[in-house]
Image (cartoon, rainbow, N blue to C red; front, top):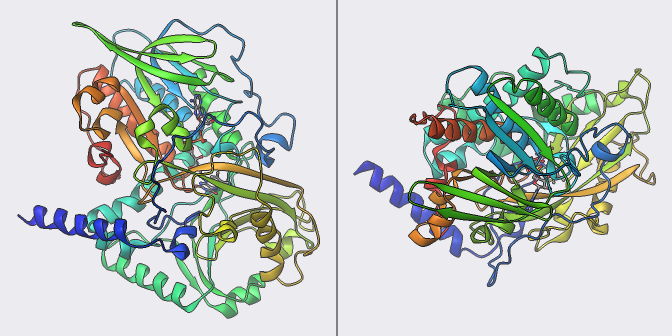
Length: 513
Ligand SMILES: Cc1cc2nc3c(=O)[nH]c(=O)nc-3n(C[C@H](O)[C@H](O)[C@H](O)COP(=O)(O)OP(=O)(O)OC[C@H]3O[C@@H](n4cnc5c(N)ncnc54)[C@H](O)[C@@H]3O)c2cc1C
C-alpha cells in the first residue's frame, strides 16, 4: 500500500511537470548540474542524425598530434563476420563496457564457454564524441539537488545518485593510480569549487546540504567558503563551497582504458576496434533455437549475439523511439581554451563551476609556477534561450552568442586575471544526451518497450546513455552494470544489482511508450 502511494505521488509530480509551461531559467541550468529538465514539447520529434563528418577541433583531440593514437584504428581492416558482443560507440561508455567485460572475465567471477569476441564500432575517429570534446571534469556531485531528489523519489534513491558518482569517480582514479597513468592522463585531484552567485542559489545549496546530512549522505571533504575567503584566496567575489573533485584529459584516459582492456583480454576474450565505421541499422532475427542481431555498416555487416548501444546523444538514430522529450535529446555544448593573463600561482589549481552549473572551468597543469595556464571553460548555453541548444546534434559549428558569453565570463569574475580582449586558442562543440530527469537509461533495450512485436526487434540489445552533460562520473559505472548484466545472461546466472545503482536508471523503470 505504501509503495503504491509513493508511486502515485511520484506520478502526480511528474505529470505536473509534463504539463507545466517551459521554464527557461531551469531549462538552461543543466550542463554541469543535473536539474530536472523541462523540455519544450515537440510535435514530431525527429531521431538524431549520424555524428557529423567534420566536427569542430577540440583541445583534447586536436591540440597535439599524438593525442589520439587510436584515431583511425581498424578503419581499413575487414570486419569480422560475427562477434559475441558488438559495442556501438567508442566513448567512455563503449570502451568502459569492453573494459569491464574483460575485467570480470579475468576475475573469473563469471565464466564463459569460449573466448568472448568483443568488437567496438565507431562512426568517426576513436573517442571523438562527447568524451573527446567535453569540459574534462571528473567530479562526483557531493550533495547538490539532494532535497529535490529525495522529494521526488525517496531517501534511498536520492543517496544512490551520489553513491554511483562516488563509486565511478573513485574507481577511475584508482585504476589511473594503480596503473601509474596519472601524469599520462593529466589527473589533477585539486578539488572543485562551486560559486553561488545569488542568495537563492546559496539558500538552495544549504538546504540540499542540510537535507543530505540528515539523510546521512557521506559529505566528507565538503567545505563552505565565505565571500571574504574566496575573494582573498582566489579573487572571486562570491560565497561557495568546495567538494572533492578531479580533472583529466578524457581522451587519453579512454585510450589507456582501451589499451589496458586489449592487453588483458588474455584467454577469455578478444577485443577489436573499427573506427570510421558508422552503424546504419541493427536488425534482429529469431529462429526456433537461436536469436541474432545484424549490425549493418557502410563496410559490411556483423552477426552479433549481443549489441550495446553506447551512442549517447545519437542513440535515437538506431533506436528511433528514443527521439523526443521522454527519450534522449541531443544538446550541443560549447567549450573554449583561453589563456589567463597571470601565472598559476595566482589562478591556483581547483576546478570550478558557477552560475548554477551553466559555467564550468579549470586550469590545465603547467610546468612552472609563473606559467600562464590555459583554462578550459564550457557552458554559456543561457545565451541562446528558449531552446538552449536542445535538439541540436551538429558539432561541426560553434554558436557565436555562446562563444561571446564564454569569452566574457572569466574576465567579469576574476578582475585583472583575464584579458577581456584576448581570443581563445581553441573553441569547439560536442553533443550531450539530455533526458527529462537528467538520469541515464541503463539496461536492456526491450525493457523500454511495452508492445510485443516491437520488443522482439530489440532482443539482446543493451543501452547506457543519456548522462545530461554529466557523464564522466557516471558513464563508466553504468558501463560496469551493462557488462555485469551481459555476462550474467551469457553464463545463465542471475544479475545482482550493485548497492550504488539508482533503480530509476534501469530501463525496466523507464518505459518510453
Ligand atoms: C561540451 C561538453 C562538455 C561536457 N563537460 C563535461 C564535464 O566536464 N564533465 C562531465 O562529467 N561530463 C561532461 N560532459 C558530458 C560527457 O562528456 C558525456 O556524458 C560522456 O562523455 C558520454 O560518454 P559516451 O561514451 O556515452 O558518449 P560519447 O562520448 O558521445 O560516445 C558516443 C560515441 O558513439 C559514436 N556513435 C554515435 N552513433 C553511432 C553509430 N550509429 N555508429 C557508430 N558510432 C556511433 C559517436 O561518434 C561517439 O564517439 C560534457 C559533454 C559535452 C558535449
